[in-house]
Length: 209
Ligand SMILES: O=C(O)CCC(=O)C(=O)O
Ligand SMILES: [Fe+2]
Image (tube, rainbow, N blue to C red; front, side, top):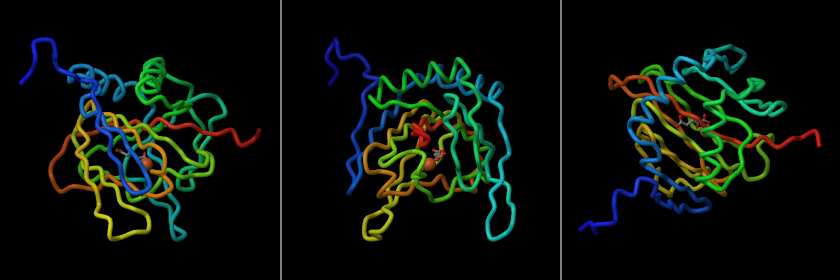
């Protein structure tokens, strides 16, 4: 039963402890109104691009649109694509600061994904590129349609796959160990779903220093 002063604790989070890694998950990090306003603003103002991936000597369009914003010099190679960050949009910079406050981590860039339909997806991978350093910490904010997000251990197949339904306004912090020991994906779905935007805040370590 709710005590009179307990209210609704929207900012509360759940710690998800996994073998070799830990996540924190805020199911309601933004209110429904905030999440839908942000979704609309990002849909309209972000410079969405259709990037390509080179695989087996062929060039294929990625099954989603992307955009990369961040501090000057926070450049990043992603699946063979060199991404130079666009300068922060004020709305994205403000979000970065809020995400840093919530997670206690530091970020200098954000990769945005736009999943236009259930046919758009993000296959099994870890965000473990060398430019992200030894133990990358990644914070993932979801907007728009709810999509299935799955985590699987990189080597131990006896550990069951974990599935989270990432709803609009949720924040998932993939903390220490997660990129070293786990992979994640957003699978395609046959269901008819509206578009989804996901933002992953990252810290590119300057390799030139
Ligand atoms: O869309 C998501 O929830 C995950 C995105 C992701 O894993 C990535 O961009 O590296
Ligand atoms: Fe990822």
